[in-house]
Image 1 (tube, rainbow, N blue to C red):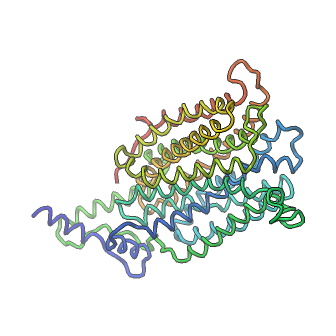
Image 2 (image 1 turned 90 degrees about the horizontal axis):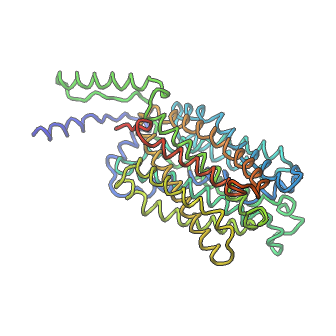
Image 3 (image 1 turned 60 degrees about the horizontal axis):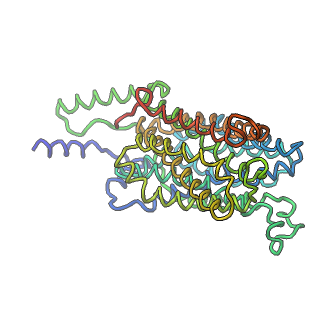
Length: 480
């Protein structure tokens, strides 16, 4: 009898307001049964559209810098490549909190539409870059208006029922991770089309004059399609104050509701910076994202660089093939395996184990460079799949912890803080990776960690720090 009364009170607790988009979504979640395929599809393609341009330039960045003529020697190319890579992250770091606050005030949908439109415009302009500074400027603007990831993390946590929260965060991180792989694959296959496909693209065409425009235009066209589809997604933000009180007019229920309301209001007014479960998960997230972006740039530079410097002498097509295969492996794992692993182990243990397993795999890369033929292809593809699967799995667990640490009214701002901090780390990542890679090519005969051994050793140090921070008392979790 007591259980039935408790359930009745919980049902009365939900009060929906006419004309509130957030309440409509809550009603939909209460009434809907079955797997949320449509919502997952929308989340997936929106996040994919924002992640595609981030690393799509890496396979051709080496050659783009060479075409600009700013590098005096081959060894200097990595140095300049790092600055183009980090300009995107710098722009995003400066604006992420602002976009998060705007999303909390005016809604998720307007920010999502703005983000997809800005990708279409600024990524196309980057493909038309005439010099080094134009490339930096367009990438900076692309990052400044790239307001989608933080907003989509909040949106995904609001559009799904509780039992699908792990699936929602997995969808965000899977689409993000696959975009970071498929983007470079597109960049590798579509860059320099007049040289690779002369029967289709002539030297006099726009793609002959702008050798790196085709992959950028392709991603911009996809972003335009996503913009049209986003017009049909529901808004999830409530336009009224949350009702905590139940409809039961008994003194005990009203008093308990009043106390609960006071607590939640006080908590919501508190500074997010004092929310340690949120801030600790953001710090670990930033460290692992620093590794992720540094690895992405280093892998492409290492694969493109000549064998005499410890690289693979791969073409943009070769790099694109490896990354496309990695994308298929990542998609399969995140869709079919990650939700089960998260339910079995929990987000913290998944992050911890994934980080620990990355270390021995990254140690093997300099030795893989000594191989050739089929053995090189098999081991390189296997290592690339594993690194990308483990990296995205580690980051997914932290996304779940972040969204559980705050209420809906603060989710946009919380994700904005996470995006700002992550972008600052990722600003350091490409620049640091480029400088580190350039330096490593000058110490091929060093006694301690020569050449690329030093590069992958530093990547492993970052992972070790990230894994160490997942232990208590540093990382704490909130139950909501």
